[in-house]
Length: 68
Image (tube, rainbow, N blue to C red):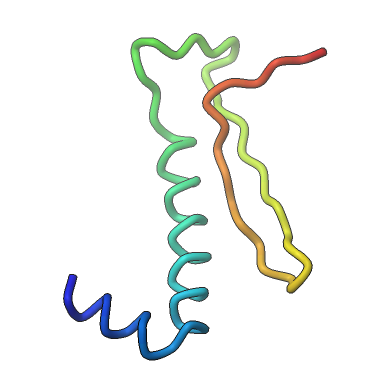
């Protein structure tokens, strides 16, 4: 943890890279797991990504989706 803290406080761009890569792998992991309280119609989870104005992409897996 100390090494990680030193790395991200020295170089913000490195923190950005670590954060973006972490969101992608976390989204993949979450999309492959199911929990007893999740009621999935076809057994799969949705994933989506959001691109910010800098071109960085954040990967997400929602817990719930409501269609209106």
